[in-house]
Image 1: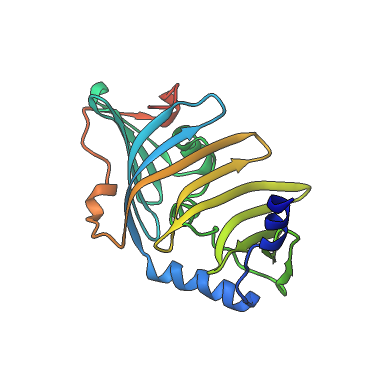
Image 2: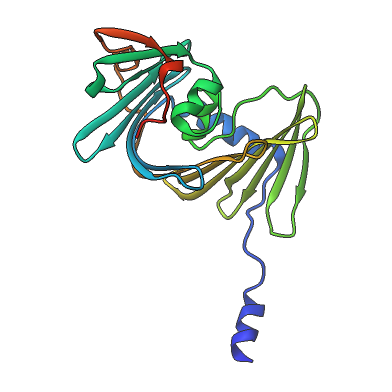
Length: 243
């Protein structure tokens, strides 16, 4: 009885007062304040996926570099400057290139996302979208703020919780249902240390756990450029996901 009474007395989890405008302004301020990031991360893609260790470098608006590591060193490097996506497995002596499309990014990330959206997600933000109408805000039974942002072709829903308030989830819907879900967890120093990205229409999923994060790191743009290689092949020639 004492234990039950204790559970009852704890009550609902705290939720700091906030308005929809304040929550959205907070996201915009973080997006403007953090323009680059270096990180070490553990990644698992798919239900049967294996954990891999990766080094990430991202820089707004479209710079992404992912080094997939193995016990023997670099297994494959993947990068883009926003237009061309390249992959370079050093052991093959060849470089693969193609359009930096969501479909091609899915070959290496496990989920199809556009490059600017990927950068936002990796930095603990929902993909930036143009809102076309009033934002609806409510408090859920789980003591969360839920904001629904109308888009021209659907809606983006954001959940915030805690004291201080942080972004915990984001979902985008097009047509008949959700097309992208992202969960943000283990917030430290204004950045989440775990990310879960899922695509309900295909079942694709990827989990990321940051081991170390350096926001606003100095980045030389050359890291996003394709490395020299004796042969350049189309990305379609990649038959398996590296790592």
